Length: 155
Image (cartoon, rainbow, N blue to C red; front, side, top):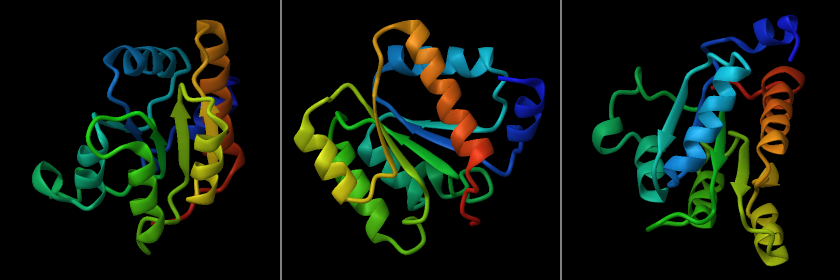
């Protein structure tokens, strides 16, 4: 990532919500964010129910000034409780949330999962690479596209 690109995506108005139950996967993702000098706010929810609480400002997420609407959601499919497909459905049926781009970030290469997620409104479907170098390249590409190339919807 070039210095100009790093500077251009460092905008605290844009933050990322990561819905990931695996501590290991989240730690790898976080390490790559640090290596890429990504300093935008990143929030993590551990499961689908936690994510919906965050998005609807319920429970511990009631303070909108701290837990604001994410600019982008990275969503795992295989979550305990409410799974990723159900979270995606909830997001895309809500008028306030449906414009938030949702990237499915999962180990599932099942064609039915891919088709279902796109039918439910996923903006991108990414299969988590097992190779760390491929993971780094994928994360860099993801950040460059969504935080630099594309124009994210306003709140």
